[in-house]
Picture 1: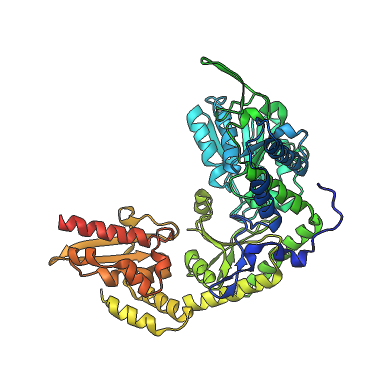
Picture 2 (picture 1 turned 180 degrees about the horizontal axis):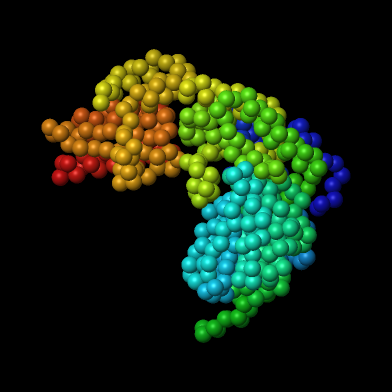
Length: 410
Length: 137
């Protein structure tokens, strides 16, 4: 699977994405909303179609050919994910509906173990999925939520983070990459610091996973959560990776079929990993689509991907200086994929709207990070977010469109 | 508030032949509508919208409903002016009889009024219609 003979050519990569071939309002689509969701290559669409055309069946319990084939593809997908993130064992890969559900499994479990006096530490740059979950777990359990501050440039204040760690810290949750600002956190060193106090560490990998090179054992965290749809796969499927010794007695999430060992009318016992955290019929087509997305991504040259992404962001940053009144929001030294900005005297919604009329798709608003926007004193930002298939020419189109929007709003 | 009538808006917009001219008109309309005072922009008057904030102020005078609206986004302000051109200074019965979807369709702006568009216009129209119903009851 990871063995590949030839890399995909970065300059023609867009051709593999049927959706990118269309025009919006007469202009070629320039899709710069990749932090919200990435588009799907034909290989993913084909794998999901093949599943429904050839072997749709329920997994694990059938006594027939289709069920065997569906189960084979479904469980092979688990191997694909395990290899992709360097999990120690395939049973550490739990299928979820996405990053949000993955974090909820951990938050729900820890809430049953936290008590008054315990602390959970997050950062000021969290997406609501990695904030509201812990906030509510703390409210339910009587524990205290601590929030590590950021600097004005959007980088984590690592000194303040360190100072907030103590023996009281039971869990640290932080984003690999900020969805609103693009800040890349030094997750290796932050994880090591937290582990020194015996805290569990969860990395919200929603924005980190698609940039490649995630090695959960190397990071040293206890949990890593991500969504398929931000990794060129389908919506409705994601992964909670957790260390086997942490997950094996983790409080069960949903109960029902698939996750049990023995059931009587009075009581039940739970199955082994990974099934004990996977109740009910899973999103089989989604899982198979996600594996196809990883297989596709593995065919890219990772070094070329990363240098291309850096080039896109650097080019956008350079072009930004040619626009009076444009301020980049989030200028951390280590940053990837996200170009968040505001324009003087213009509401981000107006910018987003006028870009859309020109075929350029961006996102505007608070990016599911209302407390972060309050911290930055902004009603929201306009955000262009890049992926492997974007080109420098598309960055040019973005800035031509921005100049027109600015001129119209002046 | 001196707004063009909704017939005038339809005639104006029909005259333009590209999106730029149409939206420039909407932007200029948005800039021309009177702004609410900062103290009037309280949470009570805030109409829940997704991206930009929208405030709606209303009262009844001489049997007609009077409205003032404001948004922090200028295109939304222009769209508000278009909505209010149809509803301001109208009786409750006139408001409830007005075909707002047909009006936005005639302007080729129906995307803005669709329930899936998160700019709060649909919520504004709903609130105005509810106020009219209240007035009629």
